Image (tube, rainbow, N blue to C red; front, top):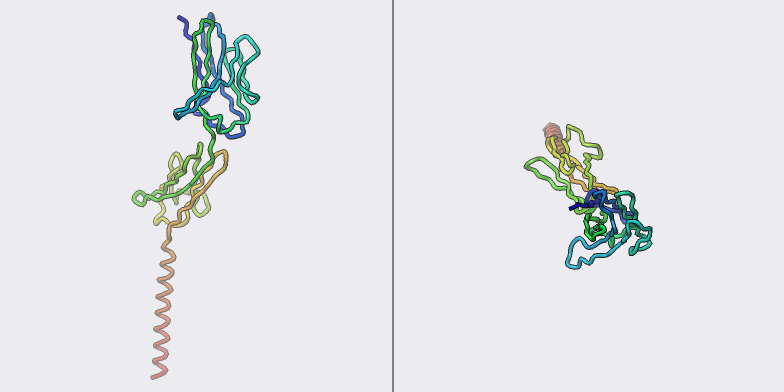
Length: 230
């Protein structure tokens, strides 16, 4: 028995920005004595009950004509690789893609790949864990989010704290925690930010000094008035 196989080489899941071009490449492994009859690319819903398979393109291995698909779908075959190209990607093009290679005897092998829409960053927020002196940055569902932190609009220094490996947490080392801490989350479609404000004690100390000075001033004025009356 010969054993033909096919797999899609793109890193999964594949995320595509709306309006861009989706390109999937599959590599075919076969015995030199095996002959490929046809190659078929198809798509179906990733989840849900209605997973009707839609044929995107079917091409004979030794012929230039392909059937199925549309003006935005192209397929090519070079040596032992086949490529599917979908232009002007939309959310309707998301789903599970499959490529099926059929040999001359009717046997086939199938490779699969998940394709999803590239999503912008949404709903950034910052919370504090007082017991561990850390700030946590949350992001809803953006694709490949990257995190960065600022303290009073400046980059985080060792005197302020250190950032976790994935960037989503800031471990604060300054005592007490004081000022404006901003988490910025971004990806290829833009960025969003959220700020946590920790109250500072310096304002309270200034108020105390002012009250003491006022009391001393009143005592001096009272003593002067008493001396004049005497």
